[in-house]
Amino acid sequence: MNALKVETEKKIIEAAKEVFVEKGLQGARMQEIADRAGINKALLHYYFRSKDKLFDAIFENIMSQMFAVVAENIRTDMSLPELLGAFVEFYNDFFQMNPFYPQFIFHEIWQNPDRLSEIMKSQQIAPAEIVEKIQQKVPAINNSDLTAEHMIANVLGMTLFPHIARPLFQRVFFNNDNDKYSRFLSERTDFLKELMTGALMGATSSEMNNKPDEDF
Amino acid sequence: MNALKVETEKKIIEAAKEVFVEKGLQGARMQEIADRAGINKALLHYYFRSKDKLFDAIFENIMSQMFAVVAENIRTDMSLPELLGAFVEFYNDFFQMNPFYPQFIFHEIWQNPDRLSEIMKSQQIAPAEIVEKIQQKVPAINNSDLTAEHMIANVLGMTLFPHIARPLFQRVFFNNDNDKYSRFLSERTDFLKELMTGALMGATSSEMNNKPDEDF
DNA sequence: GTCTATATGGCGATAGAC
DNA sequence: GTCTATCGCCATATAGAC
Image (cartoon, rainbow over all chains, first blue to last red; front, side, top):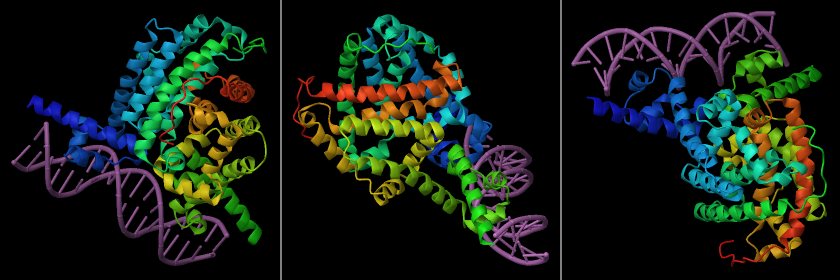
């Protein structure tokens, strides 16, 4: 029956997501995926021909989900602080709901960067657009040490770090208290959104050491 | 002969470092380690009894190397901007020399956070000391949204992000040009060091929205 | 579509000669 | 200490009944 088939496929995808995301491609076991999906190994291979193909499907699924929101945000006409704030908020929510995603994604960045940038293209994410947008909205940046690339690295770094380093950071600074850390992360969303506004307003005035930007 | 034994062990460690760091524990193959060391698999097991034990040795080796510098910096009497600047500089140099380390370390943070915090203890890294130091040197922080934990997350995030995201970030914003990206990273060291000074001086004056810090 | 049973290959680990 | 040869397991993948 077709409805059953769809149900099974969904169960497989959900189970595979969990296992791959927590253990990685190499660490994951088809047996465990089958168990969590409530089926047997053979059926996995019936739906997806191989472990690799199953992994591809999962990865594509997750990244599309993420990039869809990113692409949508870029195309709005928000002010830059609003735009950056929207990113901060989205990533914080998204990764609080899916704590394993950041490490999973960074792992893939190192194992297979090509595929990832392919997915970005297919999702219409054009980094050049983002850089341009920043340069238009903050013209002072062109005479500044703070290039658009630095700014992007700052925002992404400050936003993502507490998620990617969570198990250690939570243990070391928050007594491994999950609730406390969740509150820290929520509080941090507001903190960073305010910082975006403040830092960008300051950027126009606080620059004196201009360098010719020979490299970029 | 003993000198030979030492030589072999060194070669194994160097080879194992490369393979484990690039592929992770699960992805690494004892065969590949043996090949790169110029020996055979059996000899690997003669020196280190199992793959796990070999991995442990490598991991301990790398983390000790890193934490030794961190611990040393913490114990100096530098001003806070100097201290943070020293961290930025060290991490940037260290990870430019060893580009795979960040992903390797973050992977382990998720696979085995306990062992990592054990190693920190054995290296005399006490996070509480760092927090205290910040609170002493920047008294205004106690009445601010910018808690010490946020500040640490900011500095580490901005510093580490370009390293952990390198393959994608370099591809997407720097045409995958290695030299250009290296220059970006070096330039960024200076950029962040200046930022440390500026941001910390600003922290005392730019605060108006005080909240009682009920949680921390 | 879903299952049980089995094939196939690869990898960590050991035996034993030198 | 170092090698060759091999064991034994485990994980992916397939065959074939229902």
